[in-house]
Image (cartoon, rainbow, N blue to C red; front, top):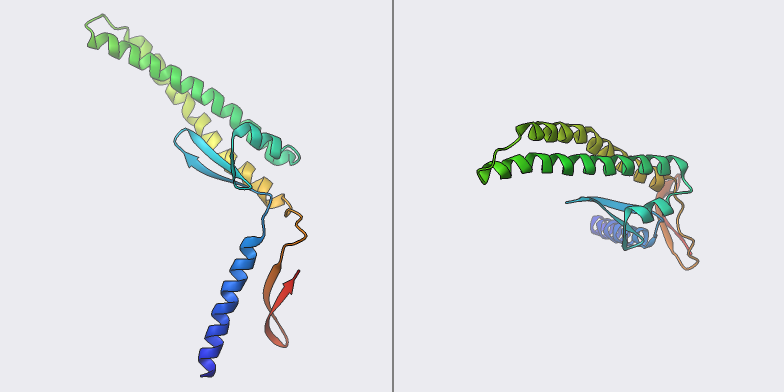
Length: 163
């Protein structure tokens, strides 16, 4: 019987702890990889890269990394799209029985190869910048927020509710 009460109280404590901790909203940016880059969410709203730069401008480390990643992304996209067009043009000419200039395809291949390290730089620096911002951001000040802490001391295990 005592074991069942302990298990039930532990489960109730765990549920309350996770519920109260999920109430705490932090001033953090969430990101996930999408088809054309990254999708950002800030305080439940979807934002774009320019808005991310505005939000993180106070954190110089995160700002510089994110700005560098955006610049690399711009050049990577330019090189990749130009390379694809330079490859597609001779291929399309060949399909329509025109004489194709295959040196353009080789140049396009070179541009695509140049874009690969730039995409790598973007994919490496954006998560680092967002993590740098999130690790140093402070919680939103909310007077009505409850905080439940679970811990132990010399007297045993217990809960501390701050309001």
